Amino acid sequence: INANYNTPLKTATKHFVSFIASGECGTSATWILGFDGILTVSGTGAIKSYSSAESTPWYQHKDSIKSVVVSDGITKIGNYAFADLSKLETASLPLGLASIGWSAFYGCASLSEINIPETVKSIGYYAFYDCASLKSITIPDAVTSLGSFTFYGCNSLEEITLPFVGAERGIEGTEESVFGYIFGYEGWFTGDVYFTIFSPFVQGENTESFVKFKKFFFHF
Image (cartoon, rainbow, N blue to C red; front, side, top):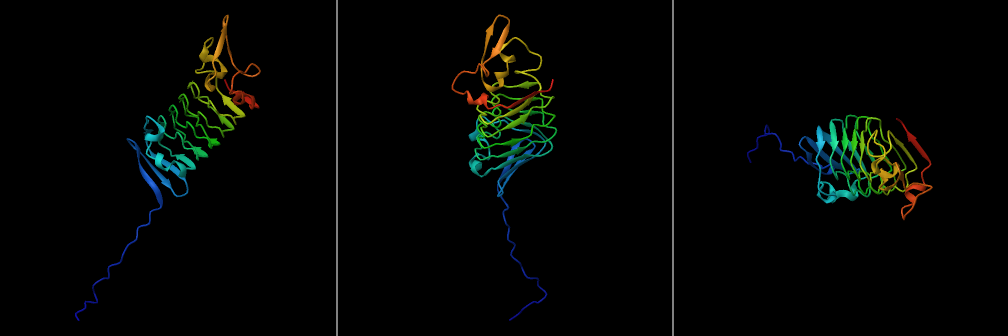
């Protein structure tokens, strides 16, 4: 038997996958979902907008997602980006984020904790629609526009801090200038003043969305 003892042995290398799935979610943005349930988005620029929750790249793993971490460098969260993640409990957003698209967290019924960075300037309509576990939220001074129905169905919300009332800073005397605008409640017009349907005048089947509030803060 001829044997060359100077020939190195070939060793088998095992590759262990430490995450559930990963991919791209923008021109310069990528995502990875770990076995710990944390969905991390990294890169620069925007998380792309989607036409529905079902069209997001992580939707097939939605029941495994417990937390979302958006890393520094991401400047925009696109439409429907994290919608319908029913098991999502927390979301961490980076300083430098400028906008949150419409329906971005739509239907995240278990979401109880999220920060809105001081750099955010706009929040689209339906952004936190039916986030029924959200108890408090602070909208920073930099925000100049809030979409309608932003907090519709947030039935556990007890404390909210707002830089203005209505859709935009400084608007008055329109249906978009009432407090109920961001909750999806219409106002009614009498003379020169719009009134919001709000406790103690609250009406309709979604009364609980309002009566649970304990504290309101406005920082003009």
